[in-house]
Amino acid sequence: MYPNERVSSFITENFIPVRIHIKEQPAVFDRFGAQWTPTVITLDSDSQERHPFQGFLPTEDFLAQLELGLAHAAFARKDWSGAEERYRKIVKEYSRTEAAPEALYWAGVAKYKESGDAASLKETAEKFKKKFSKSTWAKKSSVWAA
Image 1 (cartoon, helix red, strand yellow):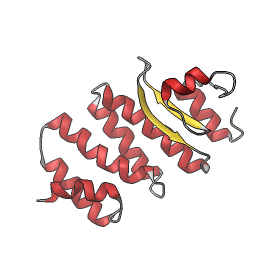
Image 2 (cartoon, rainbow, N blue to C red):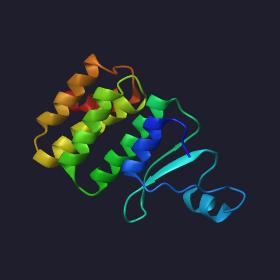
Image 3 (cartoon, rainbow, N blue to C red):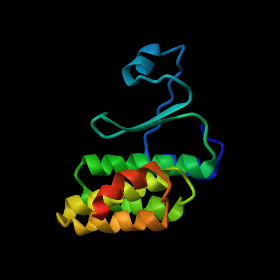
Image 4 (cartoon, rainbow, N blue to C red):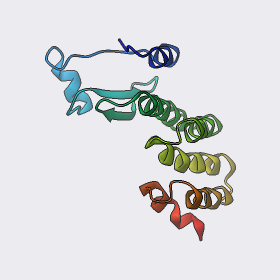
């Protein structure tokens, strides 16, 4: 289904891929509110939507979005340390993608949820000053710097 071997392997190892054709299965598109193709939606084991994204992306960006979906699913399960680990992996391995600032933000939130220590939020806000400072996620975390 995916011509890039890295993408294909990652999907095979982490997901149960389902391909749906808009003309053949319009009810499924309606169920998830898909407005454009391709639409990729990460669902958790309870079929709850955790991370959708649309359009074609370069390999690194696509993999980063898939990783973000796995991280969001772990977060939803309240697997705070697992979610934080996945988010931090995105920041480290996919730092040039749009997923990285979002991952940094949620890594800080996951660490806070695990520890209850607000210092982790402040630490995250400080990291935004050094990296991704112009992102929307930096603005969202700026309240933690105080």
